[in-house]
Image 1 (cartoon, rainbow, N blue to C red):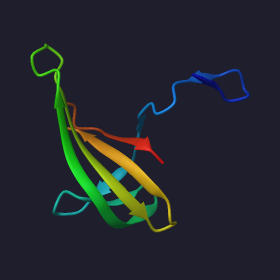
Image 2: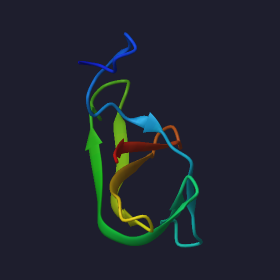
Image 3: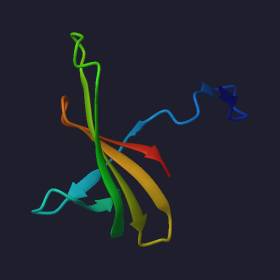
Length: 86
């Protein structure tokens, strides 16, 4: 965990909800207000399928128009988008 200087603690790499807009092909076209320039990599993680709380996520590494390399994922169970790394 880290201290942000404001007394708040957070885990490094903790996913945060993200406003991801997708195109007709299901791929992100924008993260927040920033357009996506390229999809670098796309993979699916399926885990805990043997439990009552399975994890199914589609991860995408993206290059955004402002030059950032970011990783987002779509929670295939809950349907929400998250930023894993930016």
